Length: 287
Image 1 (cartoon, rainbow, N blue to C red):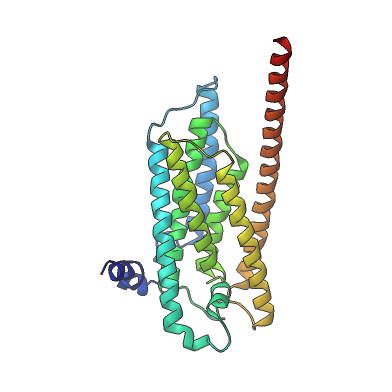
Image 2: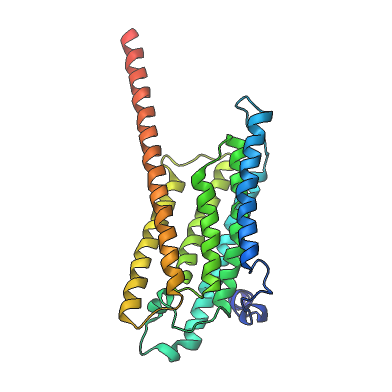
């Protein structure tokens, strides 16, 4: 009974089945997208500069339980989207596989939508929910500015580009989006659960947990992009390939920036360990 209840509300509800991406959907216009991203960037810069003027000393702004609540909400939202698109994908494959079973396997369909696919139905409903959730992710930039007094170019670029890419998925019925959302929401559910865990005072991992999860996600994304390209060339074309090419370029830029950030973080940690070791040796010599 519980399984049927979940399946109905995550996959077979009339509002999910009858969903259609159009200008009537909230946030579905190009003007909204550009205004929202521009506001996010300029507001983040404004808050950062305002704090530099008002709080010249290195003091963080106390936010209490707000970051922890945000992390918990984001983890739950990610779990819901992951479950919804997984159930919806399974249902779509069962209902429509007779259209394409001679030319594609279910896994190939996840990577490569048939030409002429329209942004409507169960899968695109959850793609729309994922697109809207990208704006909730942006609040973490504000928390970083207020708590750590830092404004990261990578964070601004990453959040802006991911919102833009999720819009392209819907606008052009882009192939590969199902697997991308499954991977992203799975990682986000774990990462934000971990952030909630540490925010309420529990012990953090002895290694950079969040960074390693992000590396795993980017690596899987890269493999899937190769799969889309091969299927497009070998199986007669994938829907939304123009948007996919642009998406791949943006993903490549994110990957390069992230690797640069990861290398800098690794070198900084190495220097800290070296200084700590030198200090311990100096203390032992004095004794």
